[in-house]
Amino acid sequence: MWKSRAQRLTDSSGAMKKMQKNIRVLYFASDCAEPYVEIITVKDSKRRLSLCSSLESEVDETEFQEVEDDFPVLSHASQLLDDFHLQKIAANLPSRTQGYPWQLVYSTINHGSSLKTLYRNMADLDSPVLLVIRDMHKKVFGAFCSDPFRVSKYCYGTGETFLFSFNPDFQQYRWSGENSYFVSGNWESLQIGGGGAGFALWLDADLYHGASFSCPTFRNAPLSTNEDFIVQDVEVWTVQN
Image (cartoon, rainbow, N blue to C red; front, side, top):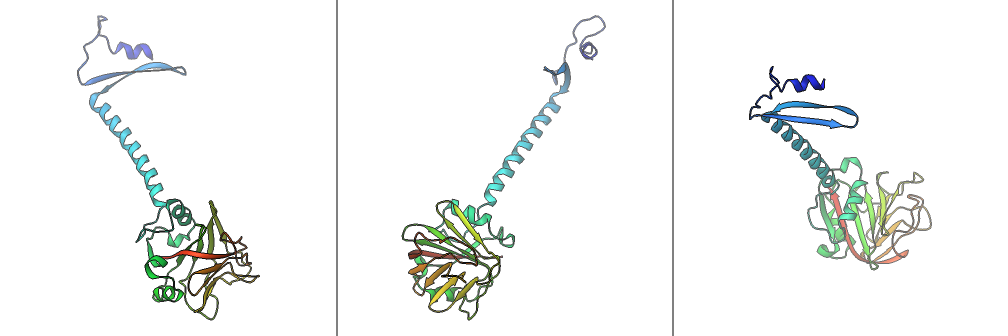
């Protein structure tokens, strides 16, 4: 094989043929294969380089796209959530909410500390919401709720509802299936989870005092630094689809 390919480079007299300027000779050798020569045109060489560059570019673009897809698009800059928070929360949202932008519905910074205002801002919503709280110890925690918050005589919500906290790593508490006390609200307070000695998350009418206890609905650990806590800031986001 080697001789027959090499012979193509010589004429009948044994002299080396003059190579055309648009031809390249490639020599291949390795420990596990017999060396050989391949003759290609410059045009083919450029085509191969272009193909390799294109494939590498596609891989880089795909990897970049995967990283970008982990971060939701926010209507406003969050004062409570950094990139780490956003990535962890977004990765655990229900599939029906993936890929849609987040709209800021309420924040204590923009709207003041009032549960009544929080309810009023959600009056026309029909989409899930994300409640984010930061206490005076700078700990971030909250809940994803399948339904917007409202005043109701009975509990509402579905098993999509879950709790989360950063301590500092991400902790998630999904529905245990033990009861359906997902969310309930009145003008005096907002409650998430229940059935035990206390609510998984409770906020007063002024969004100033809060509490978090272990409860059967989510079998969660207390979300806040202390079971009774003082609220520093609150944000509520909705996923518009």
